[in-house]
Length: 610
Image (cartoon, rainbow, N blue to C red):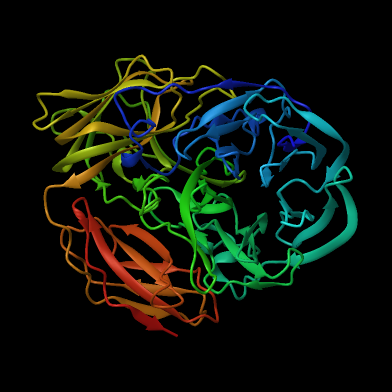
């Protein structure tokens, strides 16, 4: 029997564009699997969006991932990307470009592989489309079935082990997630079975409230969207996203049932995928895929929301089911380097490399603009221009490049080989990896364009005078707007310098240069005097603690039991915090730790709060 790969769309044929890798970095090389790491946001060649192009908004985005395993390899479909990505290891992704696609790109897609025989895809922006199938997705020869399915935007196609087929859909701040049954043996026609399943309950679940940090001055109802289904040990885990894709608290929750049609029960440790703090925020509207070795991974959407509310990136977190059947993801230090999926015991966990560049002193070749920009809606745009300053040597400074804020960025006066960025680390350390987060400032690109490339070199120095090249992509053909570069060998450094050659678009702009490794000093001491106050509104809680000497920041952990502290919130430069994301009727356990460039402190005692 031929294996079939099935897709809802129009009939397409595909050609592949395999991204080439440079030889001087090993993060994106398949020859040293045992040392493989990755870093969120994922290092792929994100597509420039046609959405908002009529407003001359030029930006890349990657959102709403639908990832499947098919015949031992992986495929990732992403909103409005004019194609999809293929990988053998979940780290190195190559773009497959269709010869034909939706003119506006697919929207909120989903894909499902049924026993290496049937895979379904949905995502036509019109909300309906035909079903295609193929036995060779890399080649991309597709054949359509003679039917059209509706309700396929923000949907999930799921085929149970008995062959029964279900379509879940919904994206609304009013209407629930729904399901209907299809007959896969009769052109995927509807059988007539339909159910309304779940809706948001903001008055009980604080994390479902709309807005940045779950607060908005006028809008109270969050959006429920992005349904996906995972079957594990006979249970059905219906995942959903809330409260809005542009916010730091965008997350995925779970309801659990004994049948694909429900009824479903709210999972007490929700949300199962949540990353509100750190550099890049958000971990919602995702899908959970099972690796060939049995490890689960949750791919999700991170909010950038600078040029537009739909400006987003992708992330990947290891996902587990505990002894009580609770589903959860490990998002702690979620935008620091993590062990690759093929690590035998710690796949997806933070690998111990810390941030060396935080608040480093930055000088630049030139400065056209330095800006903080946050777009939470088309009519809610916060823009602050940051004055250009010089240091006592007359050099232009740009500390937005080491502030751990993706919404602040620097724009050079030109996009050429005379532009550079130099960082003096606050303390010397051993550099293992560097992440470059480019920014789109009036880039002038409005759709998928092939042949884009980021060309540059990176040097390090211990004294600021004698420099060694550690990365050379001066002749690279790699398009890497969130380049993650692991050095062949770690180097001791006090200074790091980026030398531009040419990057895509009209302007050379950068949001953050992040240098990872280990400092030469000591990890901070244990946090003391950790206090928690649950407010009158039990969905809210305030925290305070004593400052720890030499700490960069703190990581608050919490959960529904001492052994289930599955949630975390990473903060910098503060000794207090306020969150609005707790469930009203759930008691919690809390813990805190300090961190700096040298490591992570001992955790505090766990505190129980009714």
